[in-house]
Image (cartoon, one colour):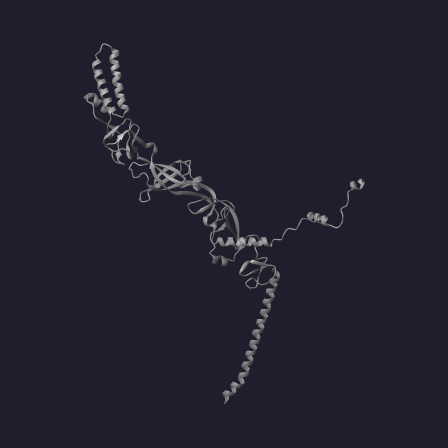
Length: 453
């Protein structure tokens, strides 16, 4: 009996306490809401609206509130939010989400190495052509392979020529004549026989008949059907234009012999790299398929014309090739150490936005503000840094990532600033001239006209 009665008495008390608590919470909420509205209205009163913009289309700008083409309410942009010119500001959290990174402008040295390909060629002063100085038939061809190694004085071929047979007979007769007249009492006759023998020898020598063969003909007194032509040079047979049994004419090229103990490397230099390549620079050559050490030499010549097929200029590098490991027409990798520039400003190459004729970087001004600047670039080094000749100072920080978003935002801000810029008023003098021209009052005549009439 007592428990139900106790519950009946405490129930109104609990309800009353709950009502009081709800009233207090509501009063506090109303007080905070009024305070927030007052503070918000005060802050809004301090800010001045610059223009209204569509939330989904930043190019849709109006001077008063309204609706965007998509039916959304226009959003106000305040003066302190709109940056002057093309400078932009980004919240640090947004910048972090965009992955914005910066790097300092550094003053130091920049070195550039030009990597290209080259082809091995013959040493041109060591290329020789062996010609026939007399007509005849090739009876025996000793050097009958292209690429064959030839030593100086080695037999090339045996030739049969009627002219050589006649010359041998004259030599034998001159020798016999000298032997017969050597004891003559008349010195002039003996001297004449001696000169005739020298002329016969000289004739065979001019036809590339060796001194040993001439001496053998004099000693034996026998005419040989064929005589041997020997090589006047050493090297390899790079071209062979004669075959055994072939008839050759005077002046005909028989062999081309090249000495490859020293070779030339022709490196391709593109036109954009020409300003950095000079004669005397250090160069290295490596074979692409071999793991040998690089061979070092200096650039000896830069050709004064451009190859019309490859649009490159040939740079010549000379190497000793005693082991004959460098073979003509082989491809090699070439690396040229270009000029080193000291005391220049540089930034990472990815920080520069190349727009054809102009290059732009974004400089961090601090507190989330970034400014676009036009710069003039120079040489790009091997470490990926680009020389800056004008536009930034040492110690400044430039944006190295997400700068393309900065560029689009900067151009948009700049376009909006130009659209909102007030138009210049017409000059007062021009307005006065227009009023005088279309005014109702007639022009006042000058004194000269009054005196005239």
